[in-house]
Image (cartoon, rainbow, N blue to C red):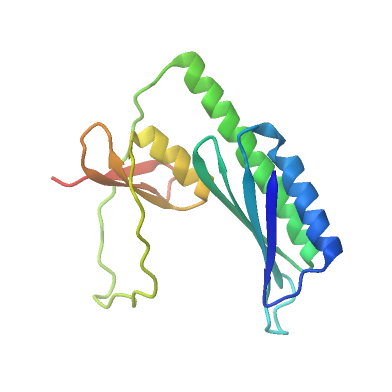
Length: 181
């Protein structure tokens, strides 16, 4: 596995670089298809922040799915240990889901819907625009992708209706699906 380590607002020494490469490669043992991973160390420059001063983010592809995991701690080593634990849990969960799907076949997923409410009328400023190619997928596959990325919503092209759709996590933990009428 090719592990690329870089630092933002911090210098990553060789010892930490080797530790990150070996731990992330060891965590990737669940899938033979993981070819590479990006590990980014970030140090908060504000001296008042002590408990979550270092952040480690790992981004990789597993089973054709993009996965992003992040964690913060008071030291870079502690944050690395936490992020590796999270990565192992997500990879284990992904493998279990893929095995279940292949054994049981496809099942229909149930989704709850929520009303959308406007806040105060003033929207936040758009500071970043992302563009990506959407491959058609089922809402079940979109839920898996959303969990792997650690996001609370996922925009995808629904393979069943051939329409753009948004899958989101509700406050009660269920999933909601927004489709155009």
